[in-house]
Length: 545
Image 1 (cartoon, rainbow, N blue to C red):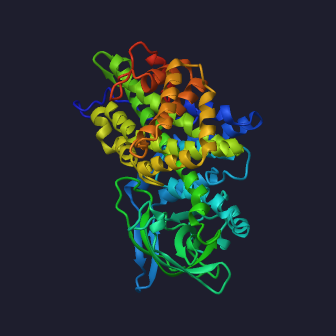
Image 2 (image 1 turned 135 degrees about the vertical axis):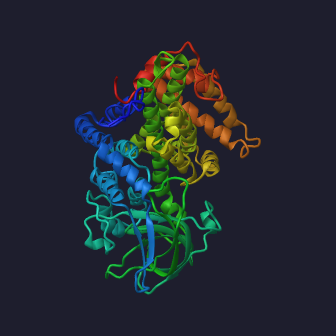
Image 3 (image 1 turned 90 degrees about the vertical axis):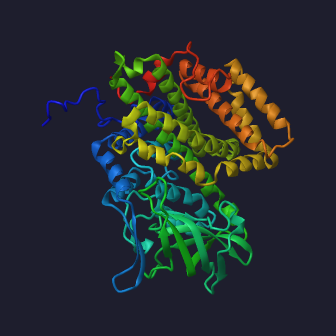
């Protein structure tokens, strides 16, 4: 029913009922580029099925509900017994169950596993980002566990399972398990060597009792956690099970849940250990070295998660502008709006293309690719996660007042957008990590420069930017103060290299002209008017009109 004064016109239809994967040209092309041709049909079918689920009204409702009804902490039962449980809305469990069944924790056991898992993570994260936290940590725990073959044999099949079971019981009684991570403490933050959690060896070989706190422990209902603590031999990595093998609950006191800006569907907590049982992973004093590959994997997921948010934001903006009319025609056809949309689309495509290149490097796992991703992951995490908030804000503005309304979904994207730049090492941490690699691991720089060399001579603006970068790298004066400047330039030339090699000419031309050729303003929508902006916008459109 509608009244005479309430006829709804000139509103874009909901972006629903479409295939999130198959309508993302940059993602589809990246998968086809890096996958083994023999398995491409299977991968495409799998990702398209996930994409249709992600674009469904049902999944979008799950995402809305999981964020509207945030997790609730229950520290005690009615009798006063400590239980330390977190209650989630059923839609959170549906999202997490679908992610697990789609293989988003199973990258390590199948051909092109990291590539297909990364593409799936990028697709499904567009429904809701919060449940991606335990998905990411479960996936990333595997390389750390492999430092102890016995632990890997016990836990890896559980982490790669396609069955999600939220029961709080011993992991050995479940068909699948999820992992969390606890490194941050309130006095140290990113400086994990300042951790004060203490690990006391027990009589059982490899077992310790942990006492201390963790200031940020996400997904506290996971089945196990990788944590850092000070053992007699120094900072050490430990596996801390939520429930002990005999079925009794480990000491894991959840003090409170964080009240976060975004990421509302995911429970992030402060936890206390008091004689908490844990198993050592790796040697004493080698905690950072043991957990570093897990950190690298979660950092790549930060880039993937930001790429997912950017893609969803741009898709919503282009979709709205396609159907919304103003000043005599569709918004998307207005030259200035077309410039804004094309500029946003460039940022999104560059992020997707780079993140999928790094996922493919994980599958190849040659010495050259290991050196390349050692540097490129930190560079990409720094830049892509920092571009996400500005893309989200500009895309929201493309919807005008409609974008500022909660029902549009854009405020949730905007609140989520700064997260990945903060988690797994903030911008300064990433930049300093890049400096350490440049100073200590020359083979990593060689591999990075070799990647840039694959596009040499293809675009004069890219060649000039690479030359300028080499000048920056050769100058060590004030290098720490200049770290962000250096990493930003490394990120842009890497993205430019990949787009020149793989993207359509109009995309590569626009990226190089703006990001590398200095023909760009300080805001989105300042691309040179001579570029083929219409083709760039058409390529980014999620559903053809």
